[in-house]
Length: 173
Ligand code: IMP
Image (tube, rainbow, N blue to C red; front, side):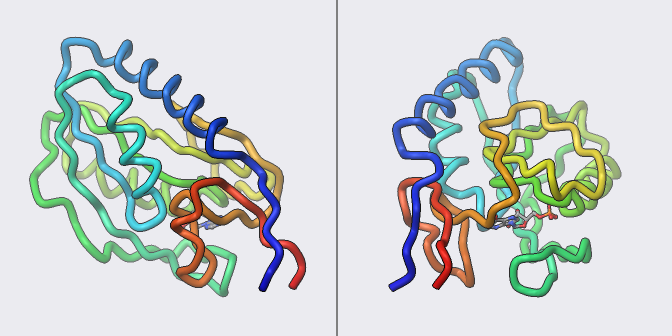
């Protein structure tokens, strides 16, 4: 069995997600928003964040696949499952698990802009600035992390570990 060390425990995640939800609630008071979780990695974070937002929200999922060799993204992105409704004139918050090189979010934001939403903001649980290739503005950020490959709380390695309730790092096997 590979050894997994804890990077951010479940309590710390919950506290931060609560703060992010409160901030979004404050910023969008009186407005209706569409939450767009990016599958698959953000499904756990999105479920928790949505429940910390005290506003009327619609939720529509978007599936993306970013091609790469194992743990590295190439910037070639495919929409595997698109939104079910138009977002024209809507206030959209994209929910992402982690911004690494930023290439996936750059692609997605360019794509969403063509659909003429009223606004698009980004909520990301994690950011790995050491590996940034493009500058992505993260409006609501959970944690900044070092250049390590993380798993758990939705994030996978070869489709495993998404159901771990904390964020961990796979140690040398
Ligand atoms: P980017 O295009 O390099 O920013 O890659 C973003 C996507 O790569 C994320 O949505 C994740 O699915 C995946 N990813 C990047 N870093 C990690 C990591 O440390 N663990 C698990 N998935 C990661």
